[in-house]
Structure formats: C-alpha cells, structure tokens
Image 1 (cartoon, helix red, strand yellow):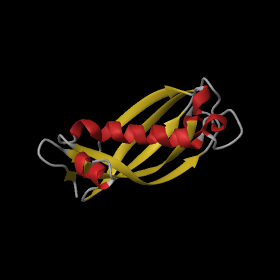
Image 2 (tube, rainbow, N blue to C red):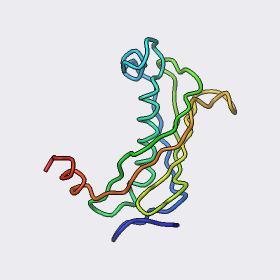
Image 3 (tube, rainbow, N blue to C red):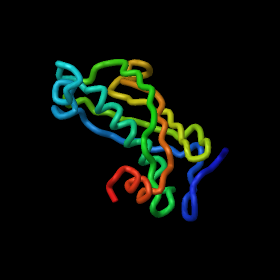
Length: 139
C-alpha cells in the first residue's frame, strides 16, 4: 500500500524527519535506571527515534489522528557521553493498512560507521486519538 490516512491526511512511504539533541545528565542510563554509567541510555535513544517517526508523519495526519508505538528493534552500537550532539533520522518505509514501519539511524560526531550510535525499526499504528484514549480508560 502506498498511502494511509483520512480526510486531510496523506501519509506516504518516504516521509522523513530528522531531530537533533545533545545528551544531558537526564538522558543517561544512570538517570533512567537502565544501567549504572553516565552515557546515553538506550530508553532515551528509543524515545528520540520515536520522536523522529512522529515528526515524519505528524504534519500529514488528519485532524484527530495520531500514531502509537507497537513494536521496535533497536541496536545501540556505541556509547555517547553527556554533551554529545545527536542527530536521529527516521523514514517511513512501509504502510500496511494502519500499520506504519519506520527505519531510523542515530548519528553522533564522526564519519561513516564511526558516527552511527544506533539504528533500527519502529512500528506505529495510525489511530483516532479520542477513541484510543477512551479505550485506554481515559474517557
């Protein structure tokens, strides 16, 4: 399938976004409880990847639509100290009904493979935000 969305929405394979951030003390494995070292924690890397995915499709969604995460594969290849600048790129690579699959790659300083901090895929599902929250018990 090449596109998804409703009235006002036009989600298509190839949508991309890049986000940037610097590693802070709050982003470390130590602060997140995912380890005991002061480097970028894997949960924060995943959150940045998901943020890039949301940024890639968000502007194309119809009013009232959102996406929610349902699956991820992530390889965290190298450590990043506090202060390290990061760039996370995401691209929508597959659409299957409401299911959206993204590939992402996170870069730090350096060249080529040396710069790659992590990479993987994120699966998100297109939903009606109000219905989703009602099913979750919030309404």
